[in-house]
Structure formats: C-alpha cells, structure tokens
Amino acid sequence: MGYEDIRVYGNVENVSSDAADLEDDFDFTEFSYDDGELDLEYEGNFFFLDDFIDRLEPCLTSNSSGRLDYIDQQAFRMTRFKIEAGQLRRMEVDLNNVLERYSQE
Image 1 (tube, rainbow, N blue to C red):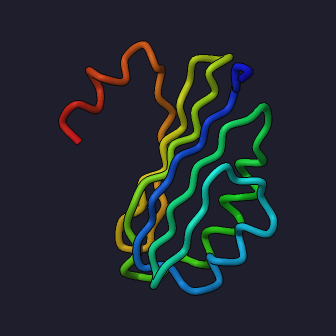
Image 2: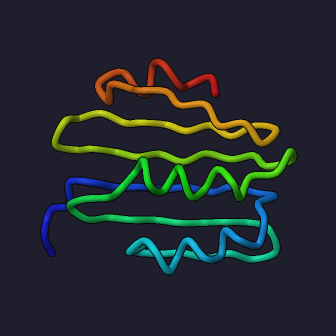
C-alpha cells in the first residue's frame, strides 16, 4: 500500500439527484448517493478539486448542508468547504493548527 498525497472526504445532505452522476466523472475511493445524501472519499495522487466544485455547486439546493475536506499532505494544507443553506464557503487551513482553529466547530 502506497502513501497517498491527496485525500478528499465529504458528506452533503439535501443535494439534487444530479449529484449521483458525479461518480462517473471522478475516480472516488468510496462514493454513495442515497435519497439526497452524498458521501464520498478519495485517496490518491491527484484530484481535480476545482472541476469537482464546479460540478457540485449546481447540485446544491437551498437546504443543502455539509462539509468537504481536501487534504494535500505534501503541502500539509487542508481546504475545507462548508455548505450551509446551499451556500459554499471555502477556507484554507494549515494542518499544524487544525485542532486549535476548528475545535469549536
């Protein structure tokens, strides 16, 4: 088993059924879509994050909520996407400080 540089984990609730099609365009390690809930995982060496976000955004509804974490272990950085009321907010996180910064969320 090799060391993977990129890890992506996400759970988003209340997405449209079009989200099920995301599995066809991205090589996820784990993927499920069931009754408006999307769960996904990816571990590998490269992930088209911007393309994925561009495809995910139209699937969000006004009731969508959840999180998506993109972890670049080589750069030791995490990009967190927090989804609330169908709006996506992007935050950059230094993994050295992730516990201190996000222990309250």
